[in-house]
Length: 243
View 1 (cartoon, rainbow, N blue to C red):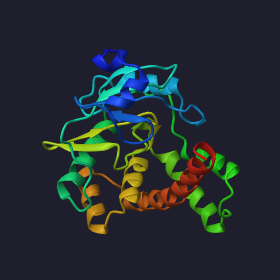
View 2: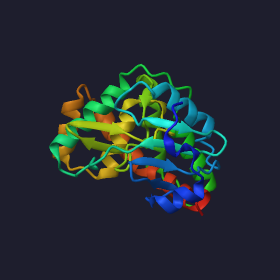
View 3: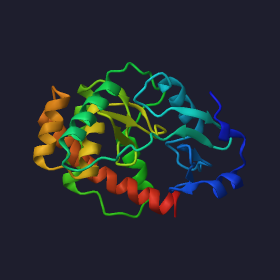
View 4: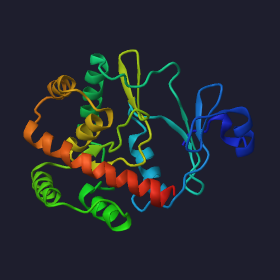
């Protein structure tokens, strides 16, 4: 790992000198982004996994550049692109860039050690949250998703492409916060992005066209599955991890 000048600055000094931007992250004047800590009580994400993800993605220019990472504390330092913008709903250029960048990741050949098994995660979330009962329609949907997973190859995926984890500047898109990255099917990333940003049907069509070779029937199943999955995941994170 490369060391940035802020590496030797104590956490208390970082807090005084920087601007808090949520979840233990501090932004310094030189656009160094410091995550002071990371709780390790999520059974699906751990610091060893994150260290591996940082290492295997370090040579890719479209993925967050991490200068320092401590597996013991979870402290991470990277560079936040100056004057970059977040995703703007309805922005056709942004939609095309997301499609291109996710496809670039999916075809990168990165070998993540970890698989992102959305079905087993969902079962875990259901077990530990007091949420709505699993309906007959939900069971049928789960069967469809399992069948889709049996037909699609596992590729390197971000698995959390929300508005905080994709930045845009000068006609390029950049992926941040890859702690949940792992091998998954490409449709998961696309469905997550669509649902999280509540894209219009026209924007969804543009995303699919730009990405290319999308089976829209399978994509629709994944979107419906992610609608349920995300509710359970959010409930688990709010009640168990952060609650």
